[in-house]
Image 1 (cartoon, rainbow, N blue to C red):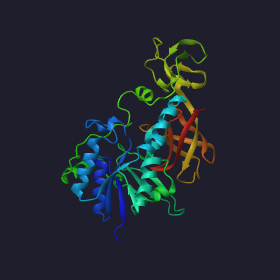
Image 2: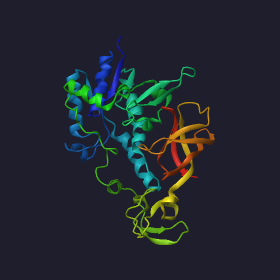
Image 3: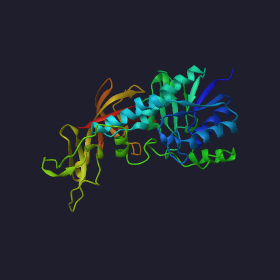
Image 4: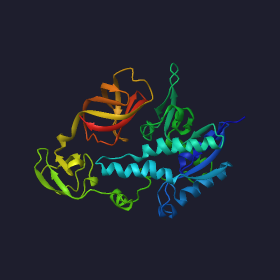
Length: 356
């Protein structure tokens, strides 16, 4: 019997071609769009959100073209709990969130996988530019970078567990983006030239407006201070600032100032010069180890579009580690993810707790 796979179809070109590639390989393909946001944004056909009418219409049209069943799964309640609430609370705590990672871990590869099991699907698949590997000795699964390094999405998949990885297929990770678009055009898929989606799919304006609309208990005004604690100005809420920011600080100087720390406990923004952003070490918590950290030296990415840099694990215990960079890094930001690599393979990843 054919193996059934449930493909998360966003209405974009990548997941559309992922469905085709799996169909071509002989899988019984079922398509489904995850409806994650139930606000009026989804009713706007011009919206760039993750579940707009346009995206659902595009996904349904692709499914029709391929001749596969198609469904819309309303996971908006779970999305609010796992992603929206996290996004809001992280800013209120003075850190910078990465909601895409939470969505992948808990929604696309979590609850969506449960839905796949309910319909008897053996696998789930997405259009991520990443590949799945397996250690021949331990049998453990891990994520590898996609062949198209300019589109690689391995960074946002570090949180996947072994049960999740075991049931996951990532067909477009073996291709260049340009090849995927050509394939879609040759298949007559209407999404072949559709632009890539925005990074935070549920925020259409400035995130501060979204936080207000979500009813967040936002911080009030406070002091802007230098590293010695001298007051240089006032801020309108520390949630409006992130490490490395140089605009809207309200302080003038011939040499630009940058945010070097968000002191939520004291309702302060600490600013300094560019050199003050350099850090040699960081502490990571909540690490998901895909592979056993058997050696001490790896590379790490501290932002999704950050180049990998050499690092050395100074100490680790369970899901916490302190690492040292081979060269100082700028704007190490609490709340962002740090993903550790061995070559093109993800060893593990976690959340930056602090720069040390």
